[in-house]
Length: 370
Figure 1 (cartoon, rainbow, N blue to C red):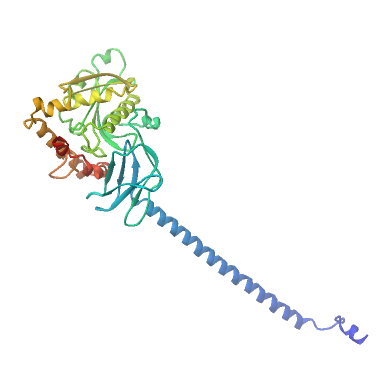
Figure 2 (cartoon, rainbow, N blue to C red):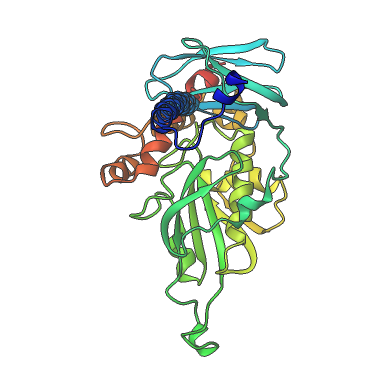
């Protein structure tokens, strides 16, 4: 009985020592829990930072170069000079390996149309995402590109289906002849519009080189002067009337025609010599918005100009090819189209970036000899 009576605390007994003991044990437990939570928070924060760092590193690696599938081509920019890169098929087979030029660009030509291509940087093993190489079919891959805006007047850029920027310069007439008699000055005007398209300095903001825009403006036409890819301030690599160059013309026609200031959303093309021949190649693709062409001083075939009567035409054809080869070089103080160099010197960052593939231009002189 005594043991039983002594178990429960009797009334009036001192509870303070037990309370202090319980308090010490409770505080210790809370400290242990808080410490564990802090350790867990530190671990969580460290893990989060590590994940963020990894993601940033991955993003940095992913943006180290830019690869793009095009028409029977794949181009890469943003590489270190002399970097080696391979083009891989979907099964990992190497199609070709090339070395970047001094501007960090390289171009794989004559690639069979297909999907799931990748490029791989030899030095690190880094790979691009999947790339699609397209056929020469004229139909646009994504017609939303024709919704882009170009300047209502003056200099700017137009983006083609493979992401290449072409330099353009828009010349609006002061007022079409007789317009003031038919419409108030405040009314929004749509102009009959013509396109000049060649590798000469058509988009030069100081005025088109070898162009006819002034004559057309005097007759009431708006004119959009366009530099072909790989020339002047236009991006891409130059090749004499390659299929991609003609598809660029298709994209130019459809984009210009969609502008609000183009009458009936239809355009014509005009030009002389180089700017005349380009119309023939563009018209064969039958762009829906192309209403008419006016080619002046054209040739029937390249072969008859290069080798009339079977003899190499060193008096004109070879010299012309040399000039085109020179103009296609990256714009600099002593090479390339000088107006493009002036644009870069005046802060045109788009023009500067668009030089990245100019070093990949086809060697016309080699092709002539072949």
